[in-house]
Image 1 (cartoon, rainbow, N blue to C red):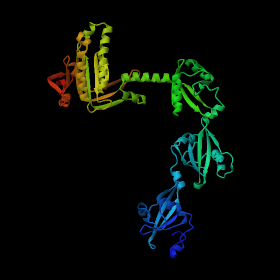
Image 2: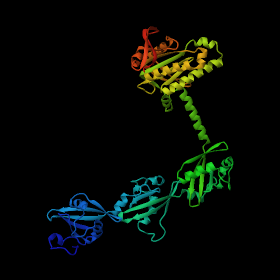
Image 3: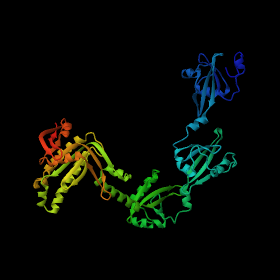
Image 4: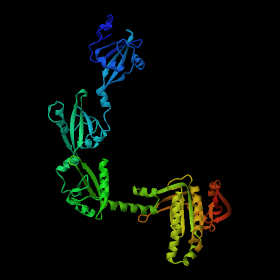
Length: 516
């Protein structure tokens, strides 16, 4: 039964909008389609039903229930179907609305690589894709802002179609550095205007090529032949043995061409005639060649090198976290640490040993031994504080906290002692170390303005030093506080009570090894 062949008349069907331009359908309690107006024809074809047929099971339940609208794809169009239960009449009316334009808005190509924006008929930006960031910066406006009056006034004619069938309207916008061609396309169905942007900066540069540009600029073909150089690029070209009519060196050409082929703005580094350059290749497809813009970064590289060297020297005398605090302008660095470990190592009989060695041999021996110590300290994650003559001082648990700092320190002490025993020079000269360890609170900070030193102070430092000075050659002497924390993981043997200057008698222990 069609919309014009209805059954017995009743008040509801007499006034049913058969001429409604939008789809309207009716479903009875059994899920059977009992009416459809002419505008529903495409929907019925998609659903595969005719008036009098039962709806497909998945749609029967969805369209008999009153509630939120459901979507139906009909070819390239999208319809929203709103079911409305008419209890008094015992059936459900389904009202269809074509929402294709709205869905087009919802599925706008955010990943379009070219700038695309959308403005309303008053010139307010309602949408902008990611690629339009530079265009928006040139216009100095963002989503929610009105376009600048000077730009909007040039775009307004597209609303009234004042240009008729002439060529599309194109408006140029520029901030002096970048230039875009903007083409408006009205969408009258949704009262919006799409703005399609194209970066024409390179094209503008071609018209007024900067022969007087103080920076190097040259032009190459896709085969790598140089077809133009500006005066500022002559020294660069001489340095790499190239020039107009000649081919770029293979490695340089490959670097430039790869960036262009992949559409990246990566800069290629080049050394030429003792100068450092960064080269940016820009494809100019309209003219079939590539512009290469050079920047002399020699001074920048020298500054970076000097900065790296300064940083290296600073880290030679200060822990990295402390150096960072100084670089960020912290004038006074003074910290209290409640739980750290301290190790002192000292060469036994160094004074007598040094009297038998010449200066070069003495310094060489100390440097070799302490360089080994430095490597072991770095590997352990602990911190060397300083050397004083033949004494070496290490701290754990600061400036960066480590819960296992004392265990690390004990393992390090054993490795230091073993390494000294393995050194042939140490064996030849009879070099032996005393090592002492203590744990407790300290105060740490940086002193000095011209020659920085990071140091630690407090009773813990003094006791650790005494553990070394009252120890025995080749042994690692520790306090009872250290022994109580290490006894579960390390082997320690009691030495007995030792008289400690400023502290009196103290029980001490020798660290022997790690527990198996």
